Amino acid sequence: MLFQYGAVHEEIAPSLLAASNALGHKISISLHAGSLNNKGDVFDAFSKEDLAGHHIIYRQTSPIPLAPGQQLDALIEHMVSPCIFFLTLQNPWTVDLARKLLSRGLQVYGIIHNVNKICRNMEVLSFWREGLAKPVVLSSYLRDNLATQIGRLPEDIELLYSSFEPDETTLYVEDNGAKQTRIAIAGSINYASRPFEILLRTLISLKKQRSEVVKKLIFHLLGGGPDRNRLITEVAACGLEDNFYFTKVNKKNGRSMYADYYKELCKCHYLVALDVDQYTSNKITSTVPTSISFLRPLIATNHFLETYNLQEVGLASDNLAEAFTNASVKLKFDEHVAMIKRIRAKQLQHNVDLVSRMVTRSDIH
Image 1 (cartoon, rainbow, N blue to C red):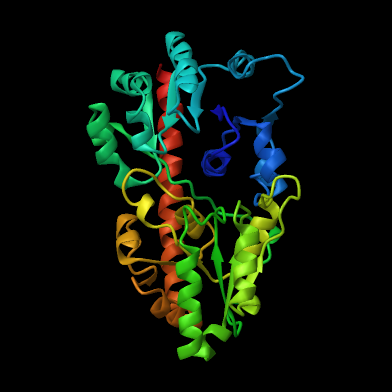
Image 2: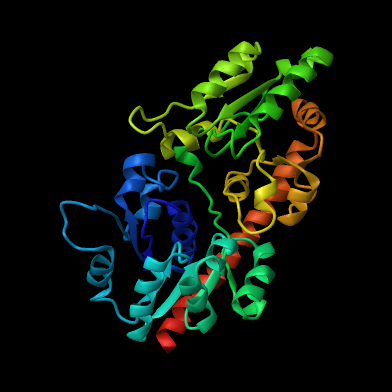
């Protein structure tokens, strides 16, 4: 049973559904309706056959009077030895639900996305230090830090790779031999968290020095965000309109839908990680599993790729101009894709093994 309290982190569910499919298990998934309303269906990259038999709901917050915990109880009431997996378990309200489930003798797993966040709340930190629920992280580099904070051994912390294999028959796959190089930028367009100024300055400078390189580059902005209009304006002011494509967004909330996100991503050759600093210490970025799931090599700093054990599978450079120049000729592109495919296969098998252990523990319990 997968459960997500709020309208975030639904992007983790596909990896667990894919692992369950490999084992022939059918699961229940309870997500917040806000995720569907704001971003569309996170399972749009799956075929109907892959989704068949699973119970997937997006819970409405109204007019249904039931609280999330009551809705969760209703879902697991008729399950035999259920195992509950929280896609986020780092807030007081989810910890409260988890405690109630544990008191009934149920198995509980939960993902910690941000180590600093649990350390700022003593109720949450105490919960994890008790050692009753099974902590899960999304990258191996977080294990040691989390283990120190909650007083547990690193090997007692499970690792889930939020990667999956999209159904390519439902997605458009770009011809990698195209003359242009398309580079995706995922996530919110927010100048406070991503250095778009540096990106523009780099392209302006590179255009002056090697205009033939910039002519080959098209950046696909996959998300919405508070500074989307600002970036569109500044791109035009810099004379870079031909180098940028902005995925359409929902007019009501300014977000892109998963269906459009997946479609545009599949037209691209690379993913660039702009916001590297904050994702190499206490939290992770969805750019990495997106790269691996869709076999798109990363453009990132050496430190970033080393942190995620992705050396030699992308264009590692601390100089964006150099990285974009290499991307323009797709340096070692086929080799990088082949290596990512092998990494994806290992991660998918790791997830299968994790789900298998979860089911076994639940049956024994």
